[in-house]
Image (tube, rainbow, N blue to C red; front, side):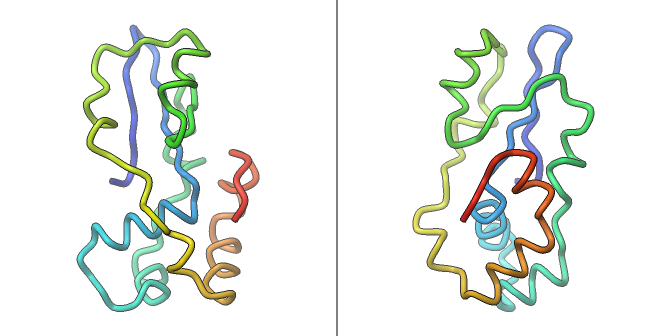
Length: 117
């Protein structure tokens, strides 16, 4: 999963993920198990601030149901989200070095969307 975009009437809703958790999830889904640090350098997934720059609304993946309700957004098709889960124990994939590397690559996402490790 590289991007999650929902439609609601004539508006778009971008669903952002914790950048640290997102990288682990994308790495596992890639089936290219060359080591997560090497995979990040090889693949470098796009910033979510770029992926969702044209969206009318942003919600956080880990609380999408609550945030859609709070914002009074009711997309007709949420099936893209229903099969996705937050990667369990994603923190265990990180060393201090890899955590710093992800922070450097995705600092904009971390800052804009209010995430931390």
